[in-house]
Image (cartoon, one colour):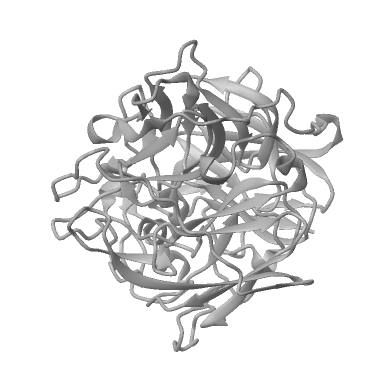
Length: 517
């Protein structure tokens, strides 16, 4: 069976015909099938673990704030940075850093972010988890072209695409609960390689409800972006693009099921160590990997276990905390947890391990309990109110099948047998209505729905899983699994997408249009 050529199939941006390989999905891991994808090994000697300090992405200051909101500016550009000690790596970064600067906003204030594109290719910005008007959600063909580029034939086969030259403002209304969101590139066919090169950053939302809780804050509130990457002998990032210039899409045959790296980076640092006080800390854990899943645990666990106290998920606070010995994370998912390092003694070291990993990917980072300190924080038994959506109010139940498929004689990834195209609508929903979606899979597929957060009703014949509480925007579906989610489509009407957040699957057509009318 031939591999699917996304450029030849759709021709959205024009360019030469290239055979973009999908291949047969491979499963990699040590505890059964843990990640869909193939390991791309580094050719540089791997750096030592737990020798470099954890760094926290800088918080971006607004260029101005007034009665109309807070205004920020970001430049997307290439830069040479030190990821592997002693070597320079070219990245694509927001303001030339990876992760990009953290944007901190308030739930009651509009946020406007002006992006300037100084990269050699078009970009799209998506605020992942945002409740955003369609014009600012980052639809995959709404391109921001490079500064100074020409606009000829950029609309391709999507006449509805909005093309902007050089700079554009993304406007985010004040419609969010406090939550750990993130922003990343979302260009059709190229999300995988663009995020791999560094186009990702945190966007944290705060509100009065969360501020009133006695949770850890300040330097005890740590955003942790966890990714896997691979490096060449010269320190450059390895990625199996058929076209390294990212003008035409596709990866080589072996990697169409997902690209897995062998170096774990946390906030851009390989296997860092964080010195912490013997107090509670909030860890905002984000899996920003292309395809790798993690099962994160503390080694050693604290006395009595349950050391990862989950307080939040994709869409913000849970109604009450949940204690875990380990947390499973699929790409794009976020879990806010509180760890009480006061359960350990000063001088002790605690490793965040990945029980789905092997060799170099079995460890993520280390915490060193450096000192004692006063701790006036706690985790309340009641965190927030979450009203359950009522299945009896659903106006329709839809079935969405996510599968490795034959697409017009070529290998690809589809939803209900249909590959993504801008003019193919997979679901039409009416604004303000509630729907139930029944999701089924063949292999691992983390399913992300834009615009509307959802609640998980069931997995298989049982109820929600251990990590399914609260408002979600990304659901981790395992091989041959079925789940039901319930969604209220409120906020905005317009054209949105839903897709697998294994970025190689997304780039190879596992995305659908959601039209809210």
